[in-house]
Length: 275
Ligand SMILES: [Zn+2]
Ligand SMILES: [Zn+2]
Image (cartoon, rainbow, N blue to C red; front, side):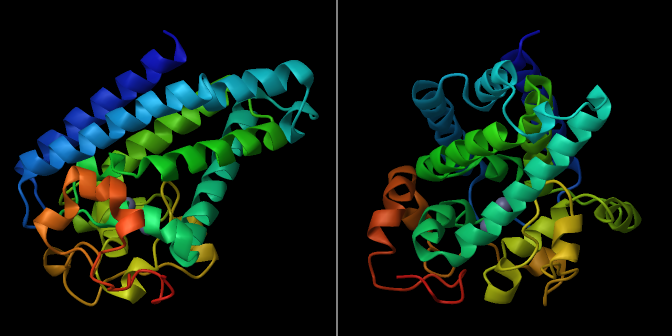
């Protein structure tokens, strides 16, 4: 199995599992058509996969091979067991994703691309795949730079990317986990209830729970919010400037950073700092 096959197997496995769980154990009532949103979110992810392949080729895994052959990066300078090296790489790359997520919320230019992710009117397994292509390209460039600095093995990068993809689908899923299980998992991981708070229209809630895989960063840096003001099924999902279905159609999403709502309304997800 090559790295793409491993990633695709993880994607398909987690996607199907969460889809089935969403059907039998939904947590939040829908306001938009699931089929319509799936069409948009999966088309967006297909476009992103093609663009990454065209612009970055073998991307972060290729960068890890390249760094390894030349002895670049901190992890290539020290002797560690394979297990410890993978663990360190996964945790440090996850910290980078957390920091990046905080930055895209507070820098207006970046927020206008990230808002595409937040504009989904419902949250489910497909939302974890919905990102503006520019945000994905920027994030890939940053990841490649970090791979050069950190020097993880190609295997560590494949493991990290598979975990990130699987966890993104899990944490965005509309699944009702038993509360005790949610509390237990949250000690270490981001759960669907925890990430749903991040997708609330309330600014204080949007600017909390930035983690993607590990929940420890939010606790460590004071951005953790255990509960939203409303009970989970009543959380209003989305961003205030884009609350109508026609405003979040596929091509509108691609143009969203340019149009910025069209009506001059400012985004609320970054303390109103948007331009
Ligand atoms: Zn966000
Ligand atoms: Zn999200």
